[in-house]
Image 1: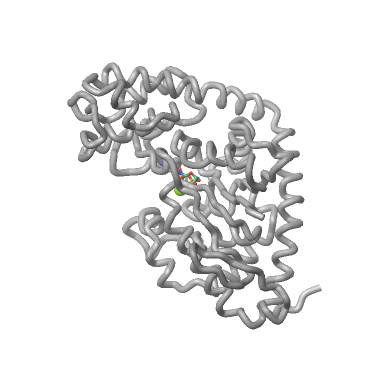
Image 2: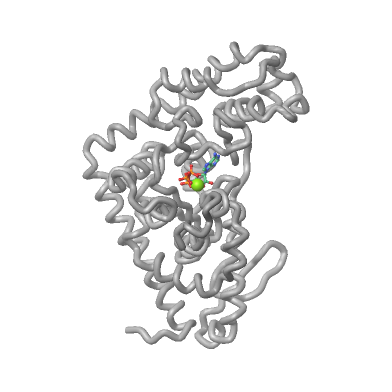
Length: 351
Ligand code: ATP
Ligand code: MG
């Protein structure tokens, strides 16, 4: 059966990129898949060890999940550190993955910056923990933004190497199941996960720099539209967003070499759930001074109800806390079953 896993780090304010690239897709997938949505708090301490109000950040991401329309009864919503299997499986995957694989990860290079020797070992091993998050539930589909594509390829590599290296033991333990990877089908224990990175909003860029993605951890608040920004803040940030002086083009071709214009048109299209070409057919020839207020209205219309719901949930966090506890119990049951199998395959004695 298809199973979805995805996570969001409690590292700051959720923004439009997180919503359009990830959370909105989480909501849609609930109809067709069994889903686990995780607040990945173990990941949150990789770039910065001491986090400001981590409990509050975890609750706030959970509130956003619920406010956006994720149903924690039909699906599973939990925080990662509560299920010990994530860290346990990540350790085994640290021994499956090769140092060279990790060294090639662009997120590591970006987040570590120039002083790479001084980055935490956890930041380097981040993709191995991410593979564990997904494979602990033997998830088959992972909705993410474009920035996580490389990590998902690595997850596939880890699954494939584990299946290959332990092939005889998996077979002997009777744990081999059919695995499909694209066209090919084999047998193994872990599935070869399919990334779900589609649509017009897989990479929303910073409002201040068309070459950088919008990020929670960007120090400039003007670079992103937070889910919790009020109408004034949204309008102001869009008004101040970097653009070039030309009018909007009428054709898609006219967005080439204009990354900031392309980004704003892409955001409009994603919010309105219309093709970019359609947006240009309407706004082509008009100035940003006309387009930006329309974009701000559209964004406010979609984000205001979500942020109102988030505030409602956060006013009394007891419901959020109950959701996370219940989610961790249900996730833990699936995780425990996987860890038993994995320990048998590796050869660890267990109860
Ligand atoms: P951080 O800066 O702490 O890494 P982030 O904004 O990248 O924060 P994550 O928690 O790392 O957020 O990612 C959560 C999900 O949001 C992932 O699926 C990621 O691919 C997606 N995502 C993050 N930024 C964008 C973006 N700018 N456009 C589309 N999707 C995004
Ligand atoms: Mg990120």
